[in-house]
Length: 274
Length: 290
Ligand SMILES: Nc1ncnc2c1ncn2[C@@H]1O[C@H](COP(=O)(O)OP(=O)(O)O)[C@@H](O)[C@H]1O
Ligand SMILES: [Mg+2]
Image 1 (cartoon, rainbow over the protein chains, first blue to last red):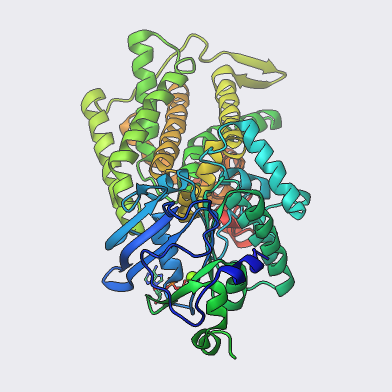
Image 2 (tube, protein in one colour):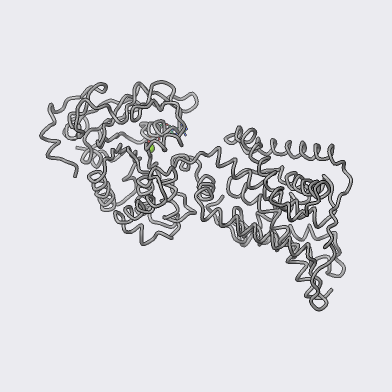
């Protein structure tokens, strides 16, 4: 679990909606509160064809922070991630990553900057082996050399030993949990600064979800890496994140420290069935 | 005809067909682009080899690297300037575009070289190995060897190199490939260029083996597409296997008393249908390449 004690100590008002813009997370894990966010979205809107799906989205992720984006099916979570990743163009607004305006960047260029997505439904290359998938994860060569990539591969295998056992197996023949494991590992091989994970828990048994999240906790603790976790399973997401945003019908309707949201009346009724 | 001779003829023709189909297997089978200009690329390769033979006196087999480089560049330009613009458009748009390109290239070749039948007569044409009563012509033997080398090289490139894997990945899931940082425009251009280069190599072999004119591309194009389906889309060795099956039918059928040479195409396509009934993905195809 991620610094729950720290979370409880520092989080201020309960049941209160924090403002979106300008608010540095009170749980900022980075050394300086003056520090600029790693990712910052401002007034983003987009859609498909004529249909608008997202309205005026503003959010940020600090260095080393774990942020959750939760919302019901169809709320626009994947659309938002794909816009951040450059697969979808935004209609309005700006996306700034590591101090750079990436709003008009193409997807491949964004990946090279270390803003990496593990897409919904895993989207592995089914006709390739686990190891080939992982090596494609390192396609941008952010590690810098073949040797560094080989070392990354070993580290990922240490973290997720099951992948090592099956490194020569085609990924289309893996179970759902193994596929998700491989998809996350493929994302890690890109050496991300920020990893966007879309629906990690979808369709997986609870114990498998726990294993995967534990692995992510370990990575988060070891590396200086940030995460934006997109989840329909609000409980899972809020338990793991420092802060969270709630997306409803393409609008961000609520945001704040995860522990606060977890206790909020509105969230409990709408998403946690209590 | 002696059995040994039939066997040799079959293997040599089949591997040549495999070479013609190899580029189609890559471009269609892996990248999902139906390139109707493939036959025109083969013809371009044949004329490039012919030109180098008559003007520079380089043997078509020796000049294959140059022919391939020439078609690689043409393929890259075509993909980057034309086909990349319609890559998200419906299938039929690519179809029409490459169909138009086919007509254009064939017309240009006709303008430059006329529609006369051309042939390359090397000093070793006609000579070969004689084992018992079986004659193995050198020019055909070399063509078969080149076909096998190209197939193995393509297979190695796709499965063992970073760019080859990027091509496979792009064919399997374009958006996921982009998330890996793969520049799909470049990847498409590279794939198309390699496909064109392979067509060029096949063209050089044709120039060496048969008399040809600009309209010869069509017959090869039709066969190439059938061979690729038969062998399995996207599988380099499948292209060779499909080529061997077609070669077998076309070698053996004309020898059957009462059938004659006119039926070989019909029977070849009947074999294609029969294979697909039992193996819908072709002889060596894998379902996820579709
Ligand atoms: N490719 C697409 N084309 C058109 N509409 C889409 C497409 N993808 C998603 N949508 C629509 O956008 C809305 C948000 O979808 P999505 O972002 O997938 O939601 P979520 O990930 O929160 O479940 C939905 O109404 C969905 O129907
Ligand atoms: Mg989604």
